Length: 323
Image 1 (cartoon, one colour):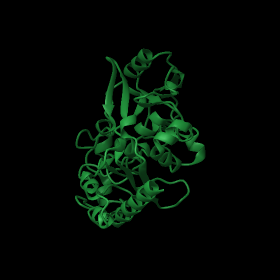
Image 2 (image 1 turned 135 degrees about the vertical axis):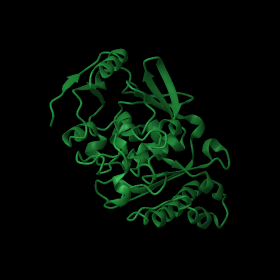
Image 3 (image 1 turned 90 degrees about the vertical axis):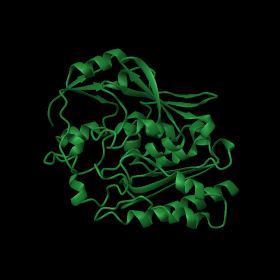
Image 4 (image 1 turned 45 degrees about the horizontal axis):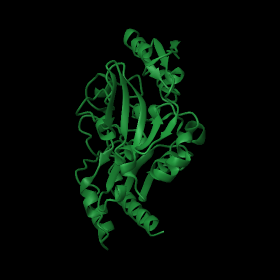
C-alpha cells in the first residue's frame, strides 16, 4: 500500500481546506477507500479523517422527519426504533447490505459516496472514461454484473444499497460546501455518466455529506425491498426493487426504484402507474420491467430477474398492507 498522511480536522472549514490544498481524499470508516488504495486505483498523499468532526454521528427525530448523520454506522440506523417504525424499508435495505461486521463499521455517508465495483475501474491496468480515459471496457468485455439501463457511456452500476430507498423516500442530502450548507434531494444527488462520467454524486471539490433527512411526508405503510444476488453470503445485488405504496397516505403516490441495473438509482414512473390495485397489476407492472433496457452480451438475464422481483415486491407490499 502506498504510504499516506492522516489528517484529523477539528472543524468542517479545516477539512475542506486540507482536501483543497493536498492531494487528499475524505475518509469516514474507510471500508471503500482503503480497498481502493490497496488496489492502487486511488493514491492520495493525505487522507482527511472525518470521524473527528462533531455533530455528524447522531440520529435526530423531528416532526418533519428523521435526520441521520453521515457518520452514523449502518447497523445503528437499522436498529434505531424510530427509523424502524417510520421508515422500515430503509432498515430492510440495510439488513441486506454486506455483512454484520461491515455494517458495524460502514457509515451512511460512506455508503452513499462509494465508488462503483466495476472490476475494470478497480484494476490499475485499465483506463476508462470513469477514471479519465476513454470508452468502457465492460461493454465488450466481462459485463455480467453491469448495467442494462443508461449504459452507453459507462455501464458500471451504482453500488450504494441506500441509494434506491433514499430516492424512493425523496431523502434530503445536506452537504457541507465552501459557501456554507446546501441541500439536494436524493434524485439530484446521484448522477449518471451523461452528467459527469467521473462522478457518481453531485459533490463539488472539497464538499462532503453532513447528514440525510428522511421526510415524514414520504412514510409508507406498505412497502417492499427485494433483491437478487449470486450468493446469499457477502455479495452485491445483481438487481433490486424498492417499492413504496401510497406514501404519506396519498392514494396512488407510489415509488418504484430499481437498483444495481444502471449507473444511478432508476425511478420507474411507468411501472408506478401500473400499480393500481387491479387483478392484473402484477402482470402489467412486471411486463414492462425491461422497457428501455439495452442489455450487454452477458447481462440480459437481469430483465427476467427484474420481472420476478417486481412481482414479488408488489405481492409483499400488498400482503403487508392487508396484515
